[in-house]
Amino acid sequence: MFFENIKLAFKDFGSNKLRTFLSILGIVIGVASIITITTLGRSATVSIQNQVSSMGLETINIFPRGNDSEARRLFTPELADKLKDNVEGIKDAVPINQTPMLLKHGRDSYKANVMAVTYDFTDVFDYKVENGGFITEDDNARRKSVVVLGAEAASKLFPGGDAVGKYIRIYRKQAKSFRVIGVMKTRTASMRMDFDTTVYVPRNTYNQRLKRITRVRNYVVGTEKGMDVLAVSGRIEDYLFKLTGDADSYRVISPATIAGIYTGITKTLNLFLTGIAAISLLVGGIGIMNIMLVSVAERTREIGIRKALGATPKVIRGQFLVEAVVLTLFGGLIGISLGTGLSYIITVLLKWLFSPQFGAFLLAFLFSGGVGIFFGLYPAVKASGLQPVEALTYE
Image (cartoon, rainbow, N blue to C red; front, top):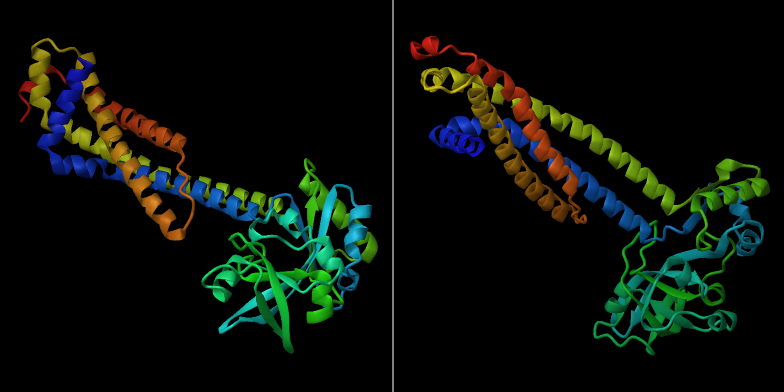
């Protein structure tokens, strides 16, 4: 009987295509909205987490505030050792200084950020070398005129490749010659750092040959494995406050903190928008109930004939209830397909990682069925309560 009711439902849908389409339109829009919102919310969260984690979730950034603050005067190369000696959980503290300069090789030129680094720079950022090698402790100690190129800088200065071993000129008032010892793998820019457009020279060499370092622009701290990054951030803040006495003269930012904030925001917004989209399902359910009541009125004589032939109220009720549920489930499937396709197109355009929530698919499908049961029950009960004589004489 159940499968017979399904066949009858699809037969009725086929004979009233326009009415069926208008009936499920609210369900389709509601489900498609929920799927699109949840998928985009999840995709945004994953994309943000991936972008932030590319900086390294185990790193902490320390920035001074204001040009005349106590923290600005404190940001000297010696602060690195002070942080490692006085703050538990710090593995490395890398000072960051960089300046835009013009680079040339033959007729090819490129304006890049020239960054002063130490050997542990790649460890803190988990930054990989494509060709050659990175700057060593010996390069820094002996102030060697060597340079490592970011991926884009290398492609601009050496379009044909084979940069390692060649020489480039870095212009800072006058040209200085540097030998290329390595080329880095491409990496997404994050946290105010564009790795691919940057070139790296030993810190002592930078200080001697390019620009005198008096203050460190910022520090990037690498935490020890297994340490609570947020706890280490708190200890750094306490130590800097002890040194400066002014909590507003510096900022301590962890990518883990940023990832948590963005995740929380996207989840809250996602929940709010999903609730709004669910209202569309309720509106669609009301439309289903209205259409089912119209169907009961149109098929009153049919109901009377079936009852006269022995159909029980339970059978009649089941027939109309199955029709309502099949109608909403069918609309739910269309909505899921539409929402998935729409969210995929949007994520591609926004260059996000497409990350569908299959649990949301199942929930939306079951919820649409629940809408069919809830709003189809009254018309079904009304149909099952018709008296055969009244139904047969209905005009």
